[in-house]
Length: 380
Ligand SMILES: *[C@@H]1O[C@H](CO)[C@@H](O)[C@H](O)[C@H]1NC(C)=O
Ligand SMILES: *[C@@H]1O[C@H](CO)[C@@H](O)[C@H](O)[C@H]1NC(C)=O
Image (cartoon, rainbow, N blue to C red):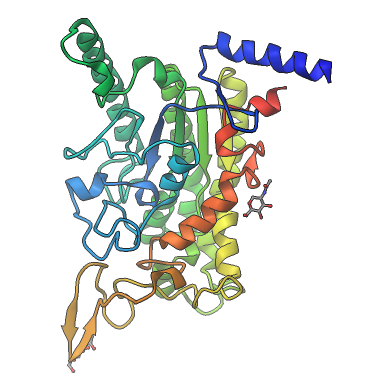
């Protein structure tokens, strides 16, 4: 017992020496107390970037939780929102959103359609997102320091991040799905597979750059089961190419290969970037589990979706069309019965279930929860 207390003390001092904000929980345990989140990714974690710039997200997106469109391709919250809730921070503002933003506790560089490598569905690939972060960090730091010298402006109400908190923040990633998705639309299956080492290599370079900028704590999602998205099932299903749950095999196999290489790359990064802590998170398993257990969990057919239409007539969520007397694009009455919201993106209920599974660490390597992603438990 005494030894344990001793180690705890040594450990706490160790963290304080690193300048890390340690928070004591009500039960006496210690959590990382991340003061900010910086997120990079695609529509799976976009909280308003693409909507503010290129492609406005229309109602009924946002109807379940926000009561109005909230820049997210979903009826409600995304996994990144449950991450913010999990570490008791406000929802992230999108870097490219110019209205009503607050960057005091981080910023979101993710945008719908983004891939690691250009070209893709969006101009804002990971390289652009990283340069945006570097500019964000430099300019907010300059501004913060200027304001600090000017006593008439109270810094306490500023929406700027604290410069010292960049190295204490959690850096989250959910990207790669569009590299594979775009690949399957433009290349052969073999070419998609052959492109994976380069995609993972570019992702690793981005992490390296952030590390050189002072980032230390990384929470990295692997990519989901691409071949289970209703859109891909509708357009990619051919006799003999679906698995036992009805998902497109080749696409899921590419996703699993990407994940295997990503996990190996993170193992390698741990040796290269010794002061960083990496948590690899198996989102694939959490999502695939929902799809294979859809019925047991009370969902309708996992390939049904709530908003927009790809069957018969193609119309995106938020639009409506009447063709030959049939109305296409009417949203469903109960989004929470659906895993898929719009054929490509998950419903809030599905994102919540996935978050419940991943945030406590049961699908992470190492198995730490989001609150402990500075890995103090495994360090002891
Ligand atoms: C509407 O009717 C036209 C003419 O019969 C047909 O060519 C077209 O495929 C129909 N469209 C849909 C979406 O059913
Ligand atoms: C994490 O949560 C999931 C889903 O609620 C649960 O099945 C699992 O046992 C939990 N794992 C841990 C380590 O608490």
